[in-house]
Amino acid sequence: MSIGRSKNGEVAGLKGTDKELLRYFYKTMTKIRYFEKEVEKNFLAGEIPGFVHLYIGEEAIAAGVCANLTEKDYIQSTHRGHGHTIAKGADLNKMMAEIFGKKDGYCKGKGGSMHIADFSVGMLGANGVVGGGYTLATGAALAIKMQKRNSVAVVFFGDGASNRGTFHEAANMAAAWKLPVIFVCENNEWASTTPYRTTTSVADIADRAAGYGMPGVIVDGNNVFNVYEAAKEAIERARKGGGPTLLEAKTYRIKGHFVGDPELYRTREEVQERFAKNDPIKNFEEKVLSESMLENKELEDIRAESKQAIIKALEFAKSSPYPHPEELFEDLYV
Ligand SMILES: Cc1ncc(C[n+]2csc(CCOP(=O)(O)OP(=O)(O)O)c2C)c(N)n1
Image (cartoon, rainbow, N blue to C red):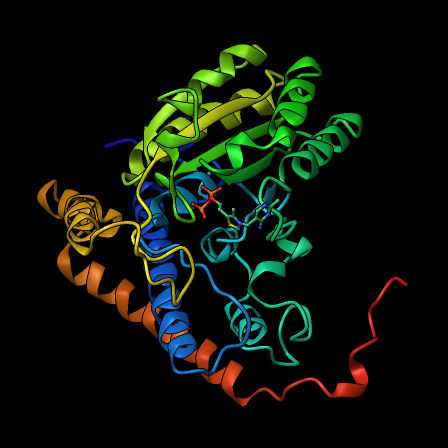
């Protein structure tokens, strides 16, 4: 096996060997899964204010894309942003505290799930505005180009968001000016209560790339290897001045649109059937064990490490105080 190996034996975006890349995939995907399960459990127990949107079942996309990035690269995320943020290396304690509305969180507990950002690791922000990320990432890519750096900017977005006008504006500018931005569409087949096929003129969103003169690539979003390889090619091209790519990762939204969604628009059977076939973590485990890439004990150890990190984050969040009411107007521009 030689995923992502460069001539000096290192993996693109990572220091190390193929085995380290496999560990990164599994560690990242299991951390996201455990993080999200705890967020779900605590939200349902009334411990978390506001809204949360879970990324369970889509972990391979964040892990496969971000394995190609360094801290000098940027990502722009969505309302369903915990997975991207974890994969980009943000602090789990500060993330969890923010989601709990606590003072030690990324926004001092005043932003919540959809406003987490960490510029120190190149995470430019989640975004409660659907389709709000394209132009921000394209702006970051323009800055990279003007400053003659070889970084890239990645914007994640959903199938629903692909129908926003901001997509057109950003895609056209990025392609016309050959900006180093990668548009990663997470096509999970649903936009809130609406199936994408009822609102979208093309079967494959990647087809739209042709209209902008950029490559459009479809990947199995439930297969981290597939996502990694396609993202690697797009990112390497962008780093060399080859311009943007539209990457469409086909996946499925396993959880409700938000935690607490009664999901009256689809059946439990449909969801269970899709998850049984498409769980990216199960897919990964089956592949690495059957092809002897990793041993069961190694998987167990990584799972334990991920679980421990989430338990710690939860303890940190729960023991952090709430912000004081008199801090309400601090950190405002106006
Ligand atoms: C501009 C804007 N319009 C509508 C909403 C309400 N809204 C939040 S998420 C969502 C659906 C997004 O679907 P998609 O882009 O496919 O992402 P997914 O939730 O499936 O990850 C909508 C309509 C919003 N937040 N912002």
